[in-house]
Length: 202
Image (cartoon, rainbow, N blue to C red; front, side):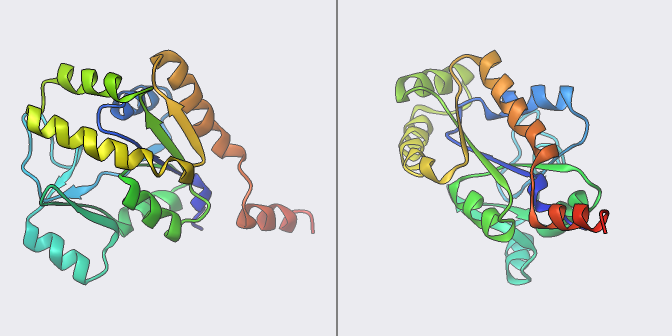
């Protein structure tokens, strides 16, 4: 049985600290399945296929779109990104908590397929803090940083669509909140959960 209340969706501006929060989470909880997206972009130094992304060709990705294999997908900066359905359903059947790190469009698509999913928006207190973090990472050119900052403002406009908001100013406090939300899923009610519990009382 698939329990879609076992889904966490995180989203927010690049550089807000989503990856750092997830890295610490994986060290504390072992029943988490991180949904690895597929992408057509070039692999960066240090990235591992199947760990950071599934790196596939544009032809394979477009065939997947035609065959309705993706739960959600988007084209960003001329590259495709998406999540294959089968890997998510398999993890849910195994009783795992599935964690997504997707953009706003991806969050909306996942919510349509899994309405009981919990969504968390992770951001910095302001644009200045985000810009400083992006520059300190030294991963992007000034042009790309400007693009990311512009996209971040558009993402902030969708913040009201999320169940929770974490302003990642103090990392330890932000992680405590993040972990609390994840742990609450073990007690989250749903129609299927209620029906199964009621059946044991018959």
